[in-house]
Length: 295
Image (tube, rainbow, N blue to C red; front, top):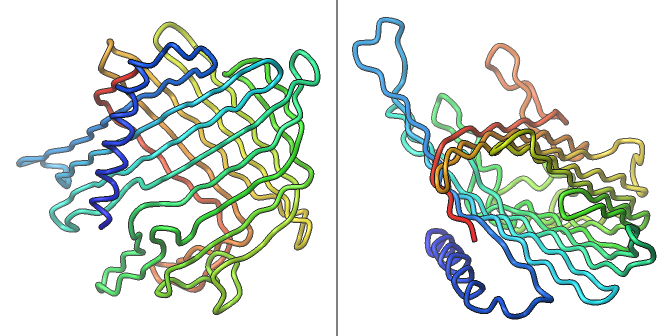
C-alpha cells in the first residue's frame, strides 16, 4: 500500500504539471513546480583506507499553487519527498520521508500587509526505525504517526513570493499518533492517547535569494509557542536549501533541517548505550546531484 500511495502521488503531481501547462489561460492562478531525482553514490575497491559502498536515491516533488484576485490571495505549497540509501551491511533504509502542505489565505489591508489565515500540515509516508546493533529495531514513526496540523488567523508582511512573514497570535495545533505500535509519549502525547491539542502563537517566515547566477539560497523558519504548557519553550523548525543549477536539467542540491521540539523525545546515548530519552536538537542533511524538471 505504501508503494502504491507513493506512486499515485508522484503520478498525480507529474500529471498535474501537464494539465496546468495546457490550461494556463486562467491568469488568476500561478502554478509552478519541480520534480527532482537526486543520486549519491560511493564505491570502494581495494581502498587502503577502507570504506563502505553505498547508494542513495531521493525523489522530491515541490509545487506552488498561488491565486490572486483583487485584494484576495491564496498561496499553497505541496512538498512530497522520499529517499532510500543502500549499504551492503544494512540493506535499504530510508534517508528522507516528508509530506508537507502549507496554505496562506490573505486579504490586503495595505500594499504589503495582509490579514491572513494559515494552515500547515506535515507527516511522513513510511515507517521509520531506530536501528540497534543487536537487531532489536524500534519503530519510531509511520504514516500519520506523528502528524502535525496547525491553523489560525494572523497578519502577514509579504514583500514578494520570495519574502514573507506571517504571525498568528491565536494558532491551534494538533499532534496525531495513530499507529498503535508507536510510543505516543515520544511526541508529547499522554499514554494511550492518539492526539494532543495545543493553543499558542505561531510565526512562519520564508526567504529565497539568488546569491549569484544559477545559485539560490532558500530559508524556511517556523516557530511555535504553546500557551497551555511551558510557553517559554519555543518549538523551532528551520530549513536551509542551496540550489545550484548546472544546466536546464542538472542540479546540485544541498539542504539542512534543524528541529527542536520540547515535547519530542529522542534516544540519548552514552558510550553507545541508550540511557534514556529527552528533547534534543534534531539535524538532517541532504546533498546530491540529479535531474530536475520544472514547469
